[in-house]
Image (cartoon, rainbow, N blue to C red; front, side, top):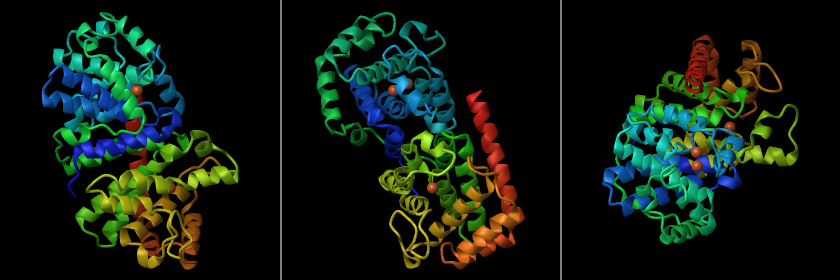
Length: 398
Ligand SMILES: [Fe+2]
Ligand SMILES: [Fe+2]
Ligand SMILES: [Fe+2]
């Protein structure tokens, strides 16, 4: 599986921008603007690439809708999301430098420490400016205001890049242009281990919008990988199952936290919003080249063998082993972890539900039997992986 870093991060930034209509396209626009500003200073290609990646992910640490909208506030001063974003992204060796820029994306020019290399200070300051240009929605009066922050929030060199052309670019991006840096910058293949590191870090962004689903993706990923191994899948297929598990609920970024957290029944319209998440998952993941299997397996986790699943109502003949395993792993993990409306089920309760879903044609009987046969083993793997994920997130957020 060959996945390129920029291609992957453009897809991921699209997922980040789903979180609310107020911020749709913010990461992509900021990335195009920041890279254009840096280019006008004739900075080296490596700087442009790192800045583009940093900008695509810069608000990744702002998990809730509120913190995301706050982050767009012109006078915004809460920079915890910058530190959290740094810690999430820095787990990927190829993204160390973009991570350091993310950490500084709200730090004023006169607050950047002397220990920060001059090139990174400048790039972070450009990212800060591009973020503010987009937050100001390209309004000329706000742009004048940014120019008055010379020497304090922005360096004179950073501000020298802020011309009328940027307003024209912002306007074009706002009217649907995707910009051109994605196709211009040199892209490299991300090593498999780093792809897993990134998916693992990103699963926190997906899951931590509700304490009830805080480690769900990790539990699904490890359960699916364990089932895959028992079913005799190859090492590559097992790794793909794990990646698909980590990302399977990426479409839930588009579901408001109040709905995810709601106790009691959902209204019909709320239920429809929840049911849209696998389709959204497909839109995001199918756009990333090299992600074909991950996309199918992740986005078909609510499809059922009897055709009564969603989003497409696929039939058994259309569902691959990977998709069938993902469905079993998702149901098993959901049943055994605590939810807003009930505590996690015991072994006998969970097996009863899985058994009846298998006999009534919803889940694949082969994989449900495997789970039945190796229950203790798989459940231990699930519990341990979810507790490691919880500890890791707590240390990130500390
Ligand atoms: Fe931010
Ligand atoms: Fe931002
Ligand atoms: Fe789901």
